[in-house]
Structure formats: C-alpha cells, structure tokens
Length: 412
Image 1 (cartoon, rainbow, N blue to C red):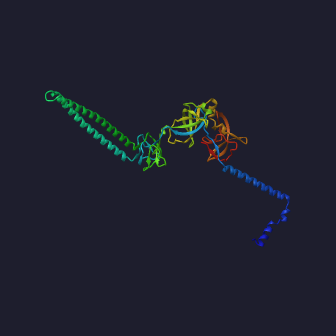
Image 2: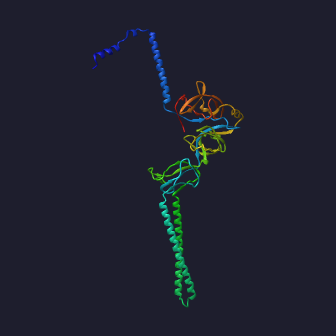
Image 3: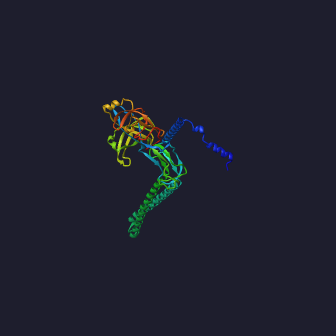
C-alpha cells in the first residue's frame, strides 16, 4: 500500500493553482492556438511520412528522347521492350551420363564444334570395342565361306569335264548342290558383316555423344553443371539431374522486341528507321530499323510485338537489357525546324498540371520527382518540353494523387 507521504504528494499534484486559474483569458487562448498549430504540423509531417513510406504506386515509364535522330527525321512513336537473341541454345548431352570435365566458364567466347564438356565414356568405349570385335569375326567367317565357295565351284567345273567317264552324274549334282550351299552362306555372312559394321558405327556415335560440343559460335552466358553431376536430355526430377551444361548466345543475332499499343500500330511498318536507347546507357542513341510486325496481338495488354534490328553491333549490348525504341519518319517542315530547338520529346500524357504549371514526374531510385517544364510543339502522341535532359525516365501517365517523393513500382 502507498504510504501517507505518497498520498499527500498525489493530492498536492491534483490541487488547482488559483494563480494559474486566474491568469488572463488571452494567455490561455494563445496557449491553445500554439498547441493546435503544433498538432497540425505533426499531422502534416505524419501524412508526408505516410506518403513516402506507404505502398508503392505502379507506374509506366517513358524515356525522354531528342526530337530528331538526324537530318530530316523525327520520332513519331516510342515503345519499350528488351534485347533478345534469335540464336540461343542450352548445350546438353544426347545421352544420360556423368560429367568428367566441364571446359567452359561464363563470359567465355566459343567456336562452333568446340568441346564444352565430357561424360564418362567407359561403357561407350567397351561397347565400341565389342562391336569392332564382332565385326572382325564376321569378316573372317565371310573369308572362310568365300574360300569354300571357290573350292566348290572348282570341283563342279572339274566334275563337269569328267562326267560320264570318271565322275557320275550323281556326284556332279552333289558338287553343284554344295556350291549353292556355300554361295548362300557367303551371301548370309556378307549381311552379317554389314550388320557388324553398322553396329560399330552406332557404337562410335554413342561414344561421340559423350563429348558435348558447341552448336554455334557465341558467348557462354550461363554455366549450369559441374564435374561429377549427371546430365540427361530429359529431366529425371528431384533436381539431381542436369539437363544442360551451359547456355550459349550468338551475339550477332541480337535484336529488340518491343510491345506497341495496337492503337498506334498504323505508324509502324517494315524497314522503318528507328532509334534505340538502352536503359543502362540513356545518352547512347543506337541506329536501328524495323524487321517485322509479328502478326498476333496480346489481348491482355492490347499490344503487338514488333521486331527491331540493331544496325550497329556493340559489346555493351547484352541479352534481356531494357530498351526504348523511337520509331522515326521523315520530318515535316515544322518538325525539322523544331529539331533545332532545345528540349526533349516525352509522351503528351506525361505532362500534367500542378498549381497551374506544367509538370512531369521523373523517376530516380524508386521515387517520383516533380519537375516543372515548358511544353512546346506536339508530334503525334509526343510533345517537346524543356526542363529535363535526354534519357530522363518519366512517368507516362501520372495519377492525380501522385506527388513529389512518392515511392513507385515500375511496370515491366
């Protein structure tokens, strides 16, 4: 139980100070105003903190591009996609076996036919030796039958010359029959020799299967197995069997696949010039052109895939890199004049109004940042703006509640 001293202390704390009670009403009003102001500031700060640390807002991005790629051309459409390889293969064995050597490393350049790995070939070599021995035995037996056939034919010729004198007709018939028997044996043994040779050939093929070779020249992008592991052309399940030893990509076959909104597909055609900008190198403009429009649409995204060729190969271009492609056409007089103006092209939908000013939201480190811009001429669904640099990543269609500092998640 609390002591009497503690009880007295509590009573003193609860006692109303008459001097404080009698202080002027103006002082109390000022105190309440200050308290309310502090509360509002705390609420605003808490709201800002909630916005910054809340759930990320999903956004689609576009890359700010220069208004012209060269004399007489301008961008009329932009689309995002990825670098893909038309020739990419996982090197694997055609038989199941245990790896004894893996002779590749990631990033290594290989030539067509180069040995990548080897399997244990003990059983394959034994089978080849057995097949060769059987083939040799069949050929030896064939030689014996051919000698017997030759002797039988000589006997028939001799008996035919002496028939009726020293050889009876019955003996001649017996010699002829024996010759036919030997001829049949020779024919049969020749088939056995062919079978033996085919068996040897099959055994050599099986032995060759223990050596895994590169199907074409390229770069090793993945090493999937180590010596001692089992590889098989079919997965055995459980994760204990590898289906390949490495992935090879032909870097000369790299191209770009982009998704174009079907509403703007009429602006794209085969052999159309284009310009590609990698997300990793936003200031590097890569000349390109349209290969083909894939004749099928993605109903979930309302887009059509377009294949774009890279006109200038470069070691910096790697498979699966993110890229933005600007499709070009010959500029009109007004577009040619605007090409010399300052600014970059962004989707018109990226420009929104905030407090009566034109704003675009750039994205850096998963945060949206409001940037005031000066909007100029329009070119299709693109618009020329000043205030941001080439290669800046902007939100394609900012939501009404998107604000400076909001955390965003980029749609892929």
